[in-house]
Image 1 (cartoon, rainbow, N blue to C red):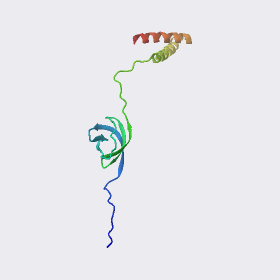
Image 2: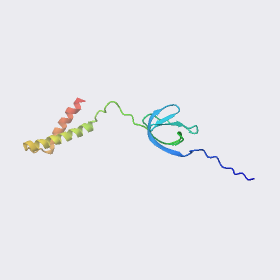
Image 3: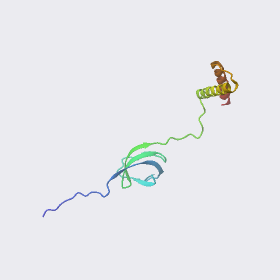
Image 4: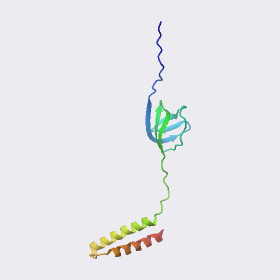
Length: 131
């Protein structure tokens, strides 16, 4: 009698590629795209991840088998950055050109480049002293 031996195949062993933003984390897994995925016992290393990080991983039956990519969420500073002197100077130059062009249209006075630079430097000094 010949008996046929078949390899046992695990049911639903298809891997799925999951991409998304981490919504929640606990010690057993993560929640991505409104679905929980547990860490597989075969996962070699649990990466350091946080809520709002973007991840790409392979999952088999809701178990994470391998992390492919992790993009950390950049922390936004609560305090606005103070403008640099260069930025203040550029804003002053833009304002001076805008003021000069407006006055030229309304009063028909032609401003020279030197006049615009003087106005820009005056605005720069005023704005820099405010900081």
